[in-house]
Length: 355
Image 1 (cartoon, one colour):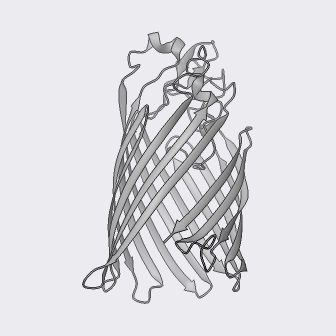
Image 2 (cartoon, rainbow, N blue to C red; image 1 turned 60 degrees about the horizontal axis):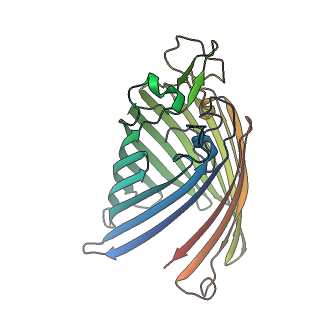
Image 3 (cartoon, rainbow, N blue to C red; image 1 turned 135 degrees about the vertical axis):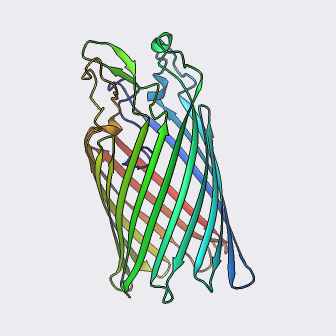
């Protein structure tokens, strides 16, 4: 959350040092998910999903919180985020109710979350309306750049942030070849929304840490479609418009095609274009005017465009991967990300399914 360009593999560019220096980042992310399904009485299906995620990263940017050290405590960190979701599908009434819980922890950050969901399917199963409500409550340990700590009295304390979202999805089967979905969401955040170790340099050479407004309202709207162009090709276009009260407006266009090379092998090339305007309180290194109420040099909030392209290869052997029947699917994905302000990243993903 917090980024309209929510793409994994890219860190905040040119931020910790106020717009100069390296932002080299390595991130290793692993997720394990277990799904349990049980048929109950009265045509009710019970689903339980357990998930455990572990990320480990090293960041040259974070290490510049204290440039005097070679590898400070901020250089590397590990995030652990378990979650649980339970839902009941009433096949007779065509309704699904769900509840979920989330937790995330790393050395300077804690987050708790909960969610409720509801979905209703039409009699002919060609339409579905779903609603999802979520709330997250975060606590961040405040780290200031070492040379600025004497000017703040909150170093080493925790500050809170709350995020609440409501998402609405309407899906429609238009004909045997075309399915579309309309997605709308509202996200409201309040509390400490700044990143305290991001330096900001002013025109008079004064230095402070980022200061962002304490409320933010995000409103994304999206349209997604799946078109079956024959027995071997599925085309999936996606468009998203985003706006918030910080002045950021963004457009996302994504196109993916899934081609069946054989009954058990499919290839999925994809391309994503993104463009956004800058937040009203953003300015590059050394361009902020003294006396400004809010200020940041976080290039995630700057004006830029980005390109993300790659492909995925999915294999579903009839006898299982490597002859193991319980290992029924393997997918390999690669993507290259490039921003107009210089940030580049590579993403490699391995997805496996066991049944």
